[in-house]
Length: 345
Image 1 (cartoon, rainbow, N blue to C red):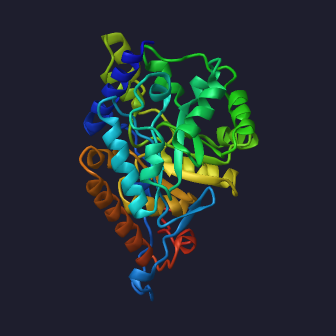
Image 2 (tube, rainbow, N blue to C red):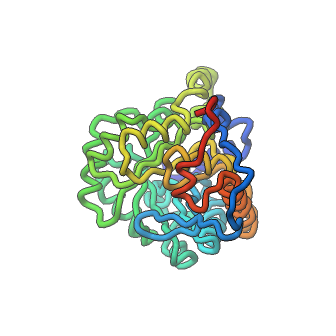
């Protein structure tokens, strides 16, 4: 594929994701089916509630990850700058979108060490697609992705559904798990594997953990549907019909978190996919997530300014703190044991 075509595709993705009516999955993430038991006597100081968490051994001020976003060549640099500056200010983590375009073209889209200069203290995660690992320079691409940002870790994203319904998609996935294991063995930083909105099953998560993957991001159904995104950008009615049939495909995020935590009690687990606010984040942590990620919800602010991103996540942090307060949870460890209403447990 020509470099200009790759950049144009990313730009199409950004336009569609910004229109939530076009991009959002028709399946529920599962948060509405969960309800905390309200504690009317918390015996806590709201302002003293401890939201600190750790990711890859680095302390975060709140258990939040600005999840990977895609972007077009002309807009990504500003978006990534706003996200990085906000993450630095708030003390939360950030994962960049796929670096394929920036590594294979002359347009770095702001995905350079300048991003690390803007955010010297955060957990910053590089990102490459699993399908790219099958290319002859796949391992080198993974190393370059990390080096380009001086990243703390590498996200490998799994998007088989998106690739299957994308006209120009990579559909031969034989050997991907072996290549992931090679990357784990070869890199000096931890590897995180995530889906992109269709969720990870417990069996797949177990295979990834056995391959040495240190962190699992469920990236479940209920947020952005990349099948719907590809359907929106399809050039003909047949391609659109194939893609749109899968707009409600996937494992709901809440179900994926619970299943993977039960199967892998000790794995570092990120919950993303359809996280709308701090209450959803609290529910994800209650089900077993260590960190909660959000992408599309933060994207509108990221197109505007650093301050808009900061304000967005400050609201989520306030909501999460209040959820802790109203469940009598002094910290995240206590929140993981907060009672759920019996009818919803």
